[in-house]
Image (tube, rainbow, N blue to C red; front, side, top):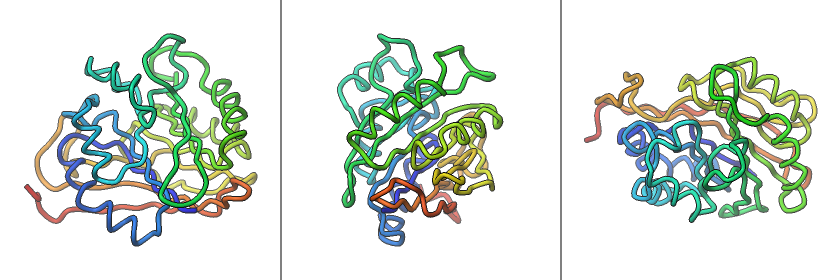
Length: 245
């Protein structure tokens, strides 16, 4: 099965290019499942119910988050009510929502999905390494394929997690820095890895949501459904030539 993971959707430009390109990408790559990081999808920081509906309408099957998930108060209720929307697993007990789920795409078996947040140069949270290993074992009883979104600042922390979880999950995909890296590979025990999948939003913008043409950054992970081992991971980059609005 082929899974598309779309990097951090940033504001209205990110939602626009996702809406405009996702159906074609699904057809071109014969995608079974689409996962979108949506922590910056509402105004460049946070997520709300209206934006979540827009992402699902565009073709997302599940939405992951990160440190900006909590930016809008409305997200708290949203995280509790919709199991397709995740926040990082390693927040303390009692935090709204969930950090892992099982989702079903248009084809193929159920897929376990885990959202983590790093601790280097970020808030002090529970250990993402231990949390991820335990959750992988729990999800494996329900889903042969497991994908992890590691939302973290430090390259070293992401790489270490990829090696730590090699063979325990199908893919470890880094998010947060908004710059797509060129280190995609399948690790020796069958886990696909990339340090950062990149950002889906203004091509020429930074922290604030900029106007102008947008970009879409993603990866396609091809997984053996019977074993959960990745066959390949391929970077995807799409660009608008001009502002579509």
